[in-house]
Image (tube, rainbow, N blue to C red; front, side, top):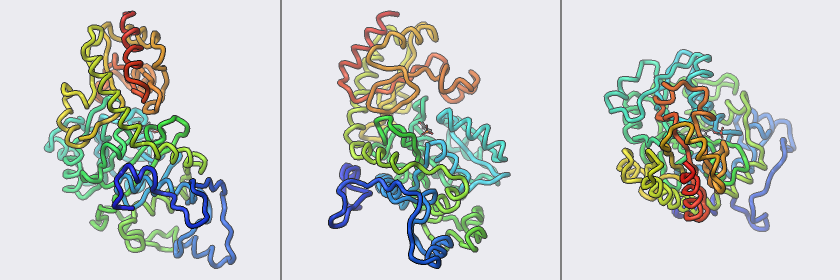
Length: 424
Ligand SMILES: *Cc1c(COP(=O)(O)O)cnc(C)c1O
């Protein structure tokens, strides 16, 4: 399938039925799998043979959808998780332990920031958060001897900051550690971070990949490109006694990282998606290429309208020529960025609330990045745990309105926004 273009992969990758099998991906809603001999099952448990034995470790429906995502991102393997949060968590703890350190862009999703800055710190993992627009020197200065990973988002939620993935990758690799990129907002349609040097790509599949807000899920994709044999990653290069001494890099080669995710992390921590949810995710992914095009063209029209409206104090959309990240976005995402636009209304916080209350088509919801246009005020909802200082550090001003532009007709979206702005 490697020669097909990405639109074809969206539709055709993953489930490839043999003669007489169902045309559509089957939902294998079974926890267990039957074998003829205890001996064979024993070999599965020791990772000497591959096969399904318990859905927490692997499930055929989940695996097909993971394979589709790996193909879209250009990775060698992927694992689905029950949420994006689980994917972020696993992507780090697969290779970072107590007493070690991660360099992270400060422009990240609020839930990821809490996970890293609070929960993972309690587990003894240290983080240095760098300014998302930092120079190469500033980024290099954040590394320590015990740094084991670098983390950023292609387009940050909700600040929409675009990360200079090639620069992050260069610095990470110079320090012998992998770059992990959360590619939720760009999706592999608009950006494939592995092509720009990222080693691991993660997703909240709850957003554009699903696209219909029907399931919460996440994913980790392994590029297979990082060489773990530099002495910094003994969890991958020395025997895992819980699997009778398997050495992941020896047994699984380029797939060491993603194999450890499934065999070790899923076994011990759980967080597998229901096969039913993976089925829904797959349906969404079949139209990802069509939807992203419409999200991007609608968002550009909406952001251009906002830019020319007197009640709007500022607009941020990486696809706008006025955006500070426009050039970088054009380089990394020549076909478009995402459907999310942020802006502030004149009159600050109170005006923002009034504006939102007067919208009719655009709905107030916590979710983002699905087919229906929706709107959110992060400072009073998703990011309410953060102090004003932490908000500003993450590129979120208290008056920021996050507008997730859907795939309706752009004129209807603009007319709704215009009438709500006129009430101010
Ligand atoms: C939503 C989101 C997450 C968390 O994903 P869930 O599926 O809600 O757990 C992580 N990263 C980004 C960029 C997100 O937008």
